[in-house]
Image 1 (cartoon, rainbow, N blue to C red):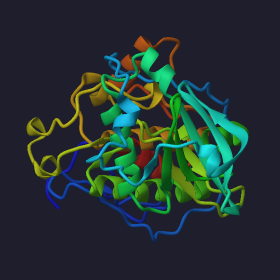
Image 2: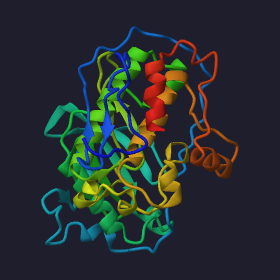
Image 3: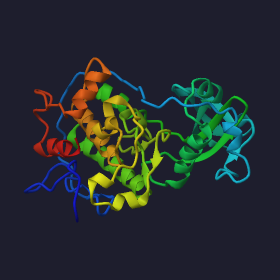
Image 4: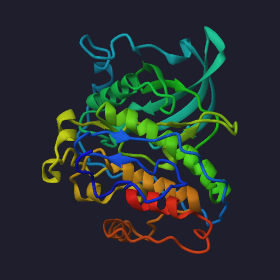
Length: 345
């Protein structure tokens, strides 16, 4: 299938017990290839000390734009008909707060015309973003995020419905996921069984393939950005938060020479989950796969592979791939699962 990246899941000799062992990241094909029908192994439990959340994002400081939000609804915008320049409370019943972030909150809402269905309302403070210089021009940033949400349609990616804009905020209406974050589940459990971890990894991989096939790189995959749709044991996971996502050029995926491949240069993401090439400032969509390797490691032991007291020390460990499978936490974990992680990191 042509030349493949160094960070790939190479075919192992014999039969692998951990799912998706035949996964490839191909330079010639330029997409993820998955085998999603392999049986998951029996549950293997291990305990570990939960790790501390670090949600710092590295972003270039930029200029402010006072006219960012209204521009979204101007004639010619790709969001004409999706963005409503009106009070969101006229269409939705606003409920309790279910989450918060640097730029705003997430609330549980119901549509007044159909109160039986619940939605999530992400309210982003326009004033706060602009006063803190979030981006050079918020208009392309917002259009980029909403355009991505409009283009994707996958059972493991959050569904976008509509947006409302007022003088102080913009409000994004998405489907409601009541099962909480994968991060919280890792903290609560300490570690996942291989059976459950493999199920979640399959779903994340399928979502990543959907994004990459549409020339979209997420760039901020982490347990906090993966939600369970409900509290059911059979609940699927959903990727959320496409604020740092970026389109990459389709022709870049076809290049066989790694020297010709740099697609993105902004050092952006959450430190624990950033790939070394992101830290170097030349990377492509496969940085998402490094993040998946970190997430898989976290699920199987309860803490991240790279940990340090300072970002500088953390980045040094990431660049040198300085991690181990510590005992006793990794004693019960299969060699196939370890090889899967090694092939991503």
